[in-house]
Length: 335
Image 1 (cartoon, helix red, strand yellow):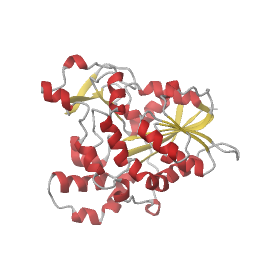
Image 2 (cartoon, rainbow, N blue to C red):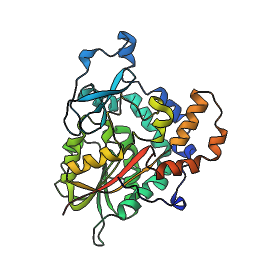
Image 3 (spheres, one colour):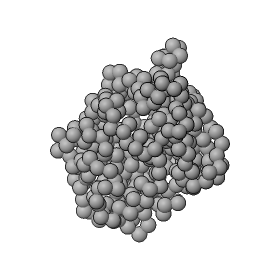
């Protein structure tokens, strides 16, 4: 695939102390396996009868090879379309309970609520700008839906930019926080939200598809909600990222109790095209070098001062080469 030219002058550093306040990142790592800790303590592993096999969530094939194992779960690669995904998995009821759990509420509070204002200014504003560059609204206020909105930091940036912005999420503490800031956030699943087809000029899925047993169902629903010519904007972890190349299975986004699907620029383009969506932008951004510095210092107990001095340069190069940890895609519905 073609990689867009990136100018170093466009690189925007991230203030990690504001994005990950206090010990929130360390706490996230420590709580990684919270959904299975009791099972492993009782049985030494996850009992097979609690897991269910699934076909490839992109192409439906059942042909796969083992990619790696982590946290008592298997991560495989589809032999037909090359998607990497967790197989077998728990059922949908299990994952709904995980995201409603107190442990997950704590993660959202520590990482999301405590950094909300920084996220609005640094990430929300940037994402609204990117969407604006691709919207076709002829001067009227864009109609925007953020699916899996968390605390609503992108919804807030969109609202402040004059958009008609709505967010939905299943996390009650995140929704309550966003509403306290006057945002139109709704604690409802996409399939139960009741939006009419072709309602929105832009729909976003930030850090959502990797969590889903059936991402195709959600993509179809989002595509149906788009007005003709509307755009879908999504983020997912990039399996081809520098994080994984540097840390292997220890890369924190490889989180098989929560992250069930692992995309690359190539497999994401394939997924979009299968759903009638034409990719217009595929780039990567990330904190790969910052994560590796943390890993060297906190896990390996090794020096990383030299890396820290040139981390911004290294991260720009990773992003520009499509090796950033976060894969960004804007795709357009025909019409």
